[in-house]
Length: 95
Image (cartoon, rainbow, N blue to C red):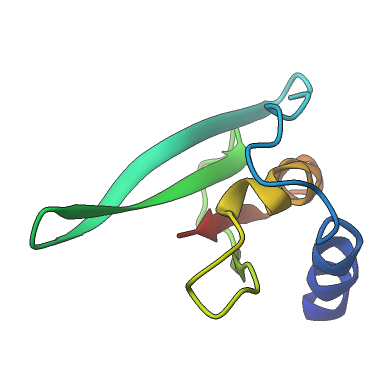
């Protein structure tokens, strides 16, 4: 499963910053811009994709974009998180 995440993640690296919202299939819930921490005045956000109708705990794959925390954007992996959620995983891409 980790290898799948790495392959999907690598394929979306070339997308431009400020990419469009991913197409979300039925059965997947996509929540962009969720604040997971606040450091001073800066809110750290993630985009979360998950299967909609799952009761039991699911594995979560966290994707971190490249750019040394100076460049890039979490939205570069939005399509991959939605694809993983469609396969039954919870997936997040973080800033």
